[in-house]
Image 1 (cartoon, rainbow, N blue to C red):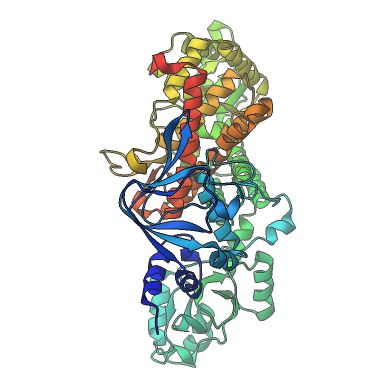
Image 2 (image 1 turned 180 degrees about the vertical axis):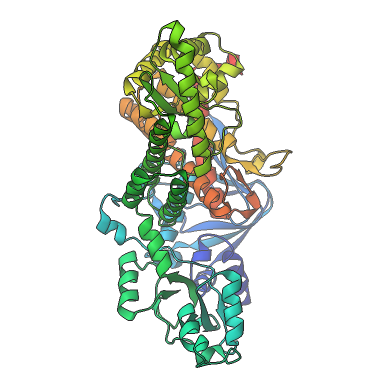
Length: 637
């Protein structure tokens, strides 16, 4: 006799993480042991100090808040609604509960027994990782060192060609299929319509055979078979199948050994399970061509902007692969930064050649903003400037004209390869941002002494500069000047701090994401303005306050402060981890939607993705509170 209640519970659980990653049979097994609880509004599920229960909870209906006592007052730590899991402490800790769970409205909760749940997920690293993140997001420090040992760390080394060859392949997930009864003509029309080289012949998504361009050439065009015959007459069978984690070298060897150009990717790697993707020889070639060392050599050898543009398309393939393989963001950022930086260098070298004469004086090309911070993963807009050696006044404009002409050529080519022109014209081709060393020093002096809103905005862009080409002594001297200007400059730092707090907490009432109220992106979440900018601004402010030189990357700034101030190490590391997590999220969204990843459609996010963002937002709130206290900003707000 069927247990209909258990089936209903299982149907609900399968819609939410982590149960959406557990086999249906196992979810049903868990559901049979689930306890159902009804609570009126304001009732306590468990209290701080209580002994741990033998279960955790998922909300079927209603809402729950977590509270803790702070200076004899109850403070709400978190909110949960339908589909959220809470009460995970029994899974990861032995101490009693340190927060109280209280129903915020009439609620129905499912109690998930640990005795049944733990054995089923013990070997599933993905589920364990999700639960760790869920538990961490409910703690005071959601990025503690112990919880994040495996989240951002890896021993992958892309300088090693052999290791790169062992990375999982990137296969095509959108597979075109047909039944064995489909006509050969229909197969050919399908291939022509979608510009593809093969169609998998299947029954109930189980692969039976494959038809490729080669089959059409050898078996149909020769007259051996007619176009009205069935696909089953010319398909190659059986299909060579592999699992999704097949390595690049393994796939290449299999294709050579069996003299085939395609591999079918199935759920378990056999022809007896469902199709999940297709891998072609072209995909392997693209991946090999997107090896970082190959791309770097290609950039250095490039002799045209069109060639660099093609290379940058391959960099995007590489970036997509690194993100899909979950390579740590630290390594991904360094790889992509070096490739972008090499591209800038090569463009400047070629443009100097086109100028017909060498630069009249020493100069440096400065990358600003996200590229200056080594955080530009996607192709966004370009921010750059030129600093050149001081010259006599009678030679100044002639010298500046040379560099403006050079900058015009460089920015034009950067635009061609994928970096949009800056809408605010923060580029070296603008005379305002093509200055001598002394002019730049004067500019920074003005920003730090006569500080209004415009000066704060400009400071937030130009204070993150990094040399991409030229004489580093110029940028080093300017960096020393900036530190001298900001040392003990409490008024300027306070204004910079007040600006860093203008982006309110990304979460509004009852854990709702604050979205854009109107305009082109109405009802979308602005990830840059509401999440990335606050943490980036905080990193810059604290780096200036602590006179940290030549470290512009936000995560590395916080890591340096963790080193300098060991008593606050956990706090600073949490800020570093948050920066990486937000950059990774934006990059994935940008690759998914082929845009900058800035504006996020919340309805398209899963519960797990929202959880990860919420985890980051907690750290943002903490760092904003820290800045408010550290810089005594109540008078500025």
